Length: 411
Image 1 (cartoon, rainbow, N blue to C red):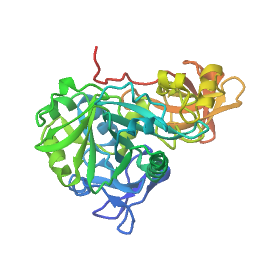
Image 2: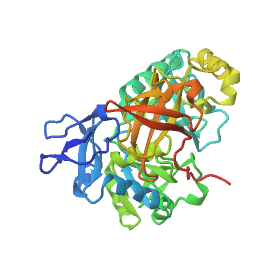
Image 3: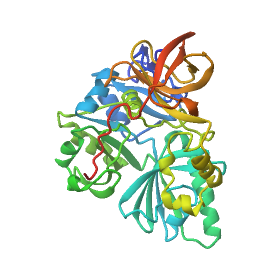
Image 4: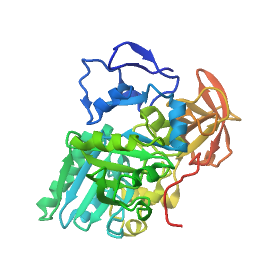
């Protein structure tokens, strides 16, 4: 399947790749009539030859004219790339009861986390389903910084607003501030040379900034929040920047030969090789963290306290097991398996699951995918069949991440 887009300058449809870009259902053709929002870096993307699409209501580059999706993917793994992620929802939470409030909607142990540290976590329904995945940073005991998904922006806003208002009615002190993209940009600098490039233009001592920690400092003379995290499996940071200074910071990083711009296409294949979920594909409200192989998100203390949304269901699943599980899939050759492709038992040809994400794997050769199968078939090396264009193709269950993670952690 090819992705067709309109470039900003020509408005002529162009086939850019046989690689299916992320969140295909939320991508739309871009033209002058598209009612979509521009990020603070929109003009920079146009200047550098970005091929623009609508993604979750924002105009973002799927790739750039100087590099194929595969080349951009490999450049990130070998050097460093900048991704515009300003479409993500950034939220500040303040108040002496902000930690207690956040723990009432997530299974994270914020009380046990040091100041300046962060964690991946999930908003949960009362049935244990995943409303969204997000990263929360405990700036201090009375301040949190949250980054969640653009595709769930309105859902997340409503969820945080309603639950915080209930807390306030109980006399609790919690204030939620949603940061609009017109106020605050966000870029992700990812790759093995990311930290070295950034160190040239920041006063933050990056050797002391470990994975999932965050601090405020100057980047290219601009005060920014820098968090050591990312969505590629590589070392890197996300930099929150005042919107009117976003181009200044991004251009300062692009002066280094080891840094290039990358788009949504490479971001998707990188995250899939890293075994990371895409909301709406691999996780949603119909799936629990246990089924999604994210049981580690349920903090030890929270399991004992048993007081997070859906805890009765999730804790029972941890103890008794589940009927389905998210797994990785490897295919050495042939076309990639896409979302919705049926997985079958290799011996009986009976349906046993479904693919949720899939693409070529430039770092490995062949193709990778994620999906859900019956619990009895989750073991790595289990042979399966995946139906692609009406043909059953051999594949096998594989450990994730498909490529080794290279996060900057204490050894």
